[in-house]
Image (cartoon, rainbow, N blue to C red; front, side, top):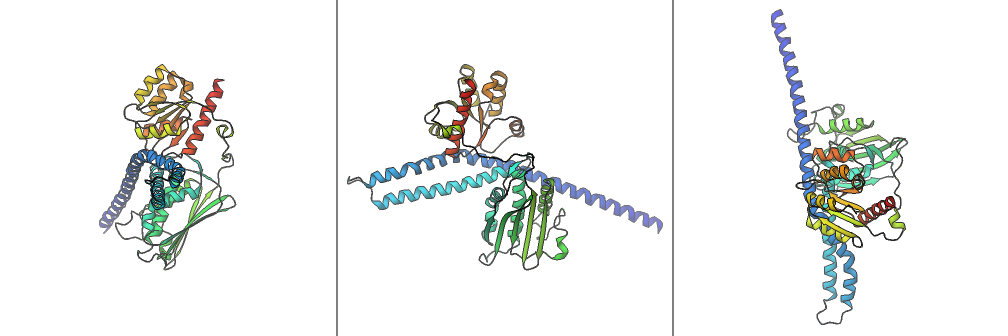
Amino acid sequence: MKGLSGQTKGLVFTLAEVTKRKKLQDQLAQSDRLSSMGMLAAGVAHEINNPLSYVLYNLESLADDLPPLISALRQSTSAMAPTPFMLDDVVDRFKDALEGTRRIKDVARGLATFSRVDDNRREPVNLAQVIDVAINMVFNEIKYRARLVKDYGRISSVMASDAKLSQVFLNLLVNAAHAIDEGDIEDNEIRVRTWQEGEEVCAEVRDSGRGVAEEHLSHLFEPFFSTKDIGVSTGLGLSISKNIVEDYEGRIDVTSAVGEGTSFIVRLPIRAAHEPPQVMQQSKAESGAHTHGRVLVIDDEAGIRAAMLRMLDGHTVIEAKSGEEALKILEADQAFDVILCDVMMPGMSGTELHQWLAKTHPQLAGELVFITGGAFTPKAREYLAQVDNTCIEKPFDPKDFKRTVAALIRTSQEHVQ
């Protein structure tokens, strides 16, 4: 019996080690899948954002130009003039196309944000904006199950990564959706609200779903624990979310009752005291007269270059369709106030061009603005984190784009004086 007992203990020890190793392997596999999904999301966002940039700009600019044209056509006495119905139909079609394009823009922004889950940089983040990104990513899971209600209160920023917090709320929203069966939308609700309590910013995701049994509540944040059917969940979502929130010195509280639904509340400390509040200041370009500048535009997408040329009307603009072509231009001519350069291009990338400028023309390197569609190689991401250059995301908001470029031109010209 003693020998048998010793063999049994040895067997139990081996099984425990195998189980522990298997769980670790599963965690690593899940981490690899998340990393691969992030890379895929970044690539998809980049491919969407490039054509979306010039499609959106053209639609928005046409929407601005259309009303006076329609007005002139209404007053036309020509027999060939379109009827009022035809004119109204043209306006409606433009509005519909513009609305659809803006929805695509929101989805692409969500993909780009989700792709940065490995980014550990902390910056002021607004929870409401983070939650909206997560909602756009998972709304297809929600819309067939429940009404979504948003109740956003006035809150301060928190110091975090928007990508990591988006992952937290994506997990919470998916869990809320899966707690509700499809087909009874009007009688079910997923409510998201934000508020502030003293030095904490709070966000709640509450559902009217089936709820969690009391004996399971204490296990919800354990790795691989799940109340869902086998194959539906890895059991890692809430564990990952808890780790992210605690890394920001916050916490997640959960309450639930069977048949009544579940509530998750995320609590995070507000921006650290040494972080100055972000204040949007009116740029000199807005307050003063228009300043003419000389701009170099570098992008391998012809449509994006064309859109930027239209937005930069009134400035002298030189185009380059590759990093190599831009390098040749800059070798012979450095008289630029601003250089707008795409990060990811075939051949010489934007970061490689900036490295060359930093060695050969340091002042000009400081005037380069990176244009990004959301996709980065690990090397490019690391490089951008080390430099102080302005970065503009595609698709552009035309007014913001013009203001930013005008301010940079003025600053560049002031340094020369």
